[in-house]
Image (tube, rainbow, N blue to C red; front, top):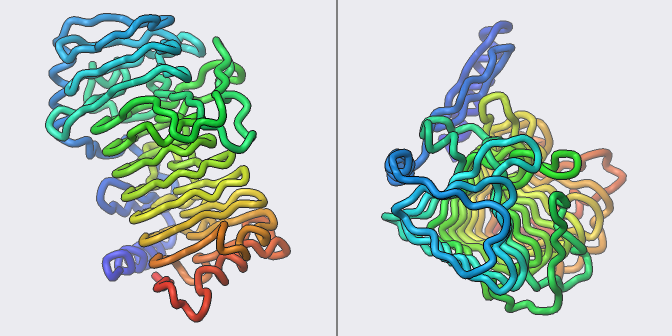
Length: 405
């Protein structure tokens, strides 16, 4: 706590002393710019094991994947696998990826951009290890491992059969092919993502050049294992979840230009032991740490959300009406005056006042005075007030605290 307070005071003090001109304040891997200085490429904090694999992949023989993967296939770690355009793991097919394998999307305009979709009733078994993780990135990043910017390829999308609320009708990227999830199977199994790094995503494809997230999960079931996954440098959301019941464990999301964890359309799983870092990334700005919309009230446990972006859209953003959630054992460090550590719009009264929809336990907010709970548009919505009442319910008996930076 003291460390964050010192940073905040230092930033304000320097700004006051200089009065005008440009000031750069560096914290960890992020750079806060005061004034008109043009941001530069952020320092690379990519783990050494990932850099080693990227360097090694540049000298491997290549094999290109395009169109459909129509039979069960294994991607081995003795090749660099290139994705050309949309690559679909078709229903009934299992795609196995060996530990230490690098899969790289080819840069291209629109539908020519490399990206991968695992369709419903297909499986991806990407079971890496800490010593040999599996890496999804771009061909450009393999060529130059220091090129740590977003928008270099598409991303990874998984479609499942766990649509349980009727809200998810199709995947938002509609070209060159529309994907519709199945429904009614909460325990549906789309495979394993474990010890996986997804880097440099977010290029636009399809109608309106819709950006692809780092990892998109559409109605994925809780038979799927997603753990020890890092998403870094995404040109859209880091991870977006539409509906479904899948659980995520040991997740790190940083340097995304939109929301870092975007949860929509009745997602009801648990995200546990995760870290979100909303940072200035070159000349790109991130938005919410967690954005929730569409009658969603998922579970979040053991988390840290760090906001170092002056354009941020909140540490946790309750977007629209009928939004809730269950938050347990977490910290929000909100180093911004753009919105609030807890940020909301719409009348969330129905969900906030019903403890079956919203609970907050053991959560600490570190924020500037007046920026812990904030309504987006005006105070007539009162949703932030209701969230604050839930936060301090029964005289703060749930161990929640707010400290001023």
